Image 1 (cartoon, rainbow over the protein chains, first blue to last red):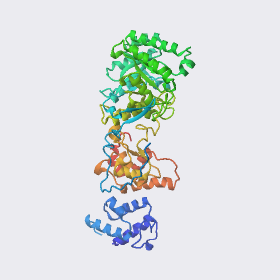
Image 2 (tube, rainbow over the protein chains, first blue to last red):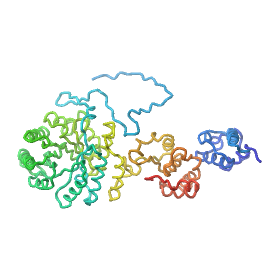
Image 3 (cartoon, chains in turn red, yellow):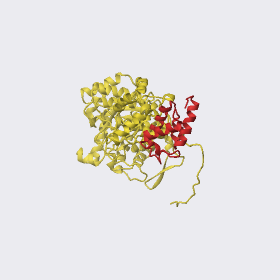
Image 4 (spheres, chains in turn purple, blue):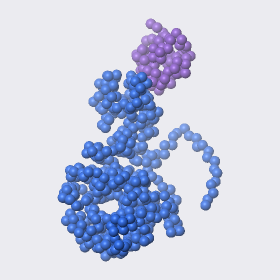
Length: 84
Length: 471
């Protein structure tokens, strides 16, 4: 199974329509990858779908970089008993 | 004159919000508080004090002229329609008679049948009164109808006295009016003299002498027969500002009639018109300066630009008194729905009842509404008017607005409320309407409902049975 990091980058590339290989760990979703307001929500929804988890809306939307998203999702997966 | 003193204003730092809930308690319309400082109006060179706080103790009331002035601005109502409106007016004003009276034409068979049918309902309030010309013969109509009180036109400006009614002199005019007042007394009917065009009249030369004479005449009759005075701002010229001059000054007019002529507050009534957008402020001013009654029409509909809106006066009443006094404000919504159903137009942005009166369009505002509806809703419109705050969806709505629309549309509360993450497909569709399809109009509830069913079938299936009333 691909790592959390790879899956986060894959979803990010699809939703934001950017080249997956160009996504860096410290990229900011809006400043570096161009996420608009609605795309941020689509990202969160797609992460939930990809990992089969439910995230707190406010906490999830406050995550601003790829590496923070990876850490946050890994933590939620652990809390919700989802194997990754 | 006092000089302006420069002061510094240090920040009062706090981590808890001060929501000013003494005024904005949300359960009621925002309350109107006055300081204990005197309100001064200079009249005839002398400062005169008014006590606005007395309004809490005074028996201020609303009187209605929907069937008289209101009907002068539209095709006639059917009898059944008027009976239904009367019944709702009674429920709106409540058992304490906040809507104290309503007046009826008496000239046609339909007028008289309407009056009979309204009285058959047995409501104590609003009391039915009549409206006639200042013609002695018209009292036969009032007597036959068995009414205790009638309004009568006693036009008071020289525009009316000379140009319209063609009297040869003011004395001839006054004598003629007083003959009719005498006829009312003889008929056992209380006259309510409507000082038509008062705000364009010669106050010292005609109004005050005429009212002095009416007060003298009233000395011969019991209290419940004494003449009432309606101050008619027929053309909407009245001004509420301090130091405005007569005849346009509402404070001065009321003072002169109340204190100099001695007409008690419970026999003074203000009737305004909205030709200069002043109608509600002027009516409220009349209450504060000593008129106990404010006369209005439902939704302000009346001759030309209309009259003080009754529902506006009702909200003002609650705000001044600080409690509901038996009023049922939800009837305002019922009345608006009924009026629309019989072809009465109500603007979409009209306060309290317009389709969009508590609808927000901007996404940033919708975000506020979502976290605490008080941020962008004037009062608890769900409780007071059966109208939850709504959002209208455009390109400015954002996901916050769309989430709020979904929650309000399905009437979802507490844990059932849906987060904006769950509505992302609907939000994307909305954005694409504007960004891709270049749409220029707002999206209707019907369109959004259809798209919810298509894009979020699980939400639709779960909540379709709970679409909120009024949505």
